[in-house]
Image (cartoon, rainbow, N blue to C red; front, side, top):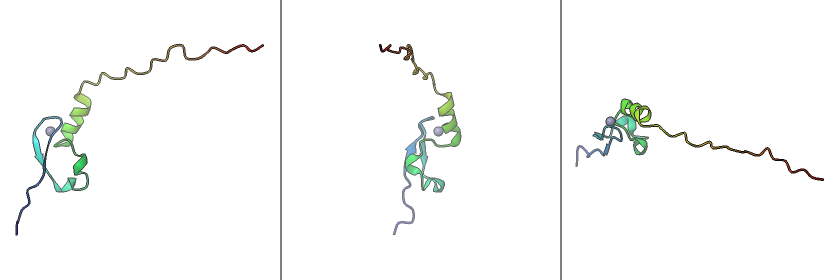
Length: 68
Ligand SMILES: [Zn+2]
């Protein structure tokens, strides 16, 4: 019988390096995207976060129809 099973591997979304399954990820392996906390943090903060373009609220209401 096989002694070791090949552990699954993933590719880090930040550094692009493959990393192996770890016991601590046994419950969240499908959600793991980064090889380490550092990559996770850097990917979140270091990326070009130039979003925040929503919010164009021009001429929002203010017009009340005058009923006779
Ligand atoms: Zn990484």
